[in-house]
Length: 177
Image (cartoon, rainbow, N blue to C red; front, side):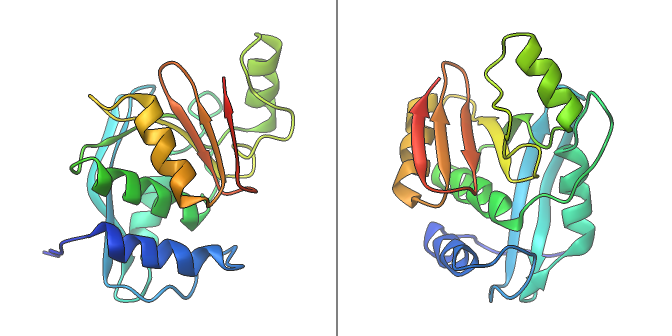
């Protein structure tokens, strides 16, 4: 059984390393990074899934997390940018290890287009379609607090909405939805 204490400082170091031109799942020195994720749309939960192990991406853990982040409407999976998982792990560590509730992860173009047709705030070239975004909630943490953390990290886009926060690994920017 693997055990480690993940601190915000070590996670920030990992994110800093991944944010310097790293677009794939390679080369961030660290020991173990884990995530606990809840996916209400599918009724699934993954507890303390390791996605980084012994200085390398842990493919079994990434596959489990990618499955949870799938487009639940189309039942399609896409590898999620490793930096998204680091952002989620930082948020989880910052807010006392509370599970990350993912309301939207990867979206197919078709699902994204359907959301747009329904009047839901889904942009045409969404980072969700690229596997580079997540809409999240954390129980008992107001979205503005999660968004403030995301903005402080300055590692991608941060959108704050009434009930959730959008985090992505695109250019740093922020908005209110």
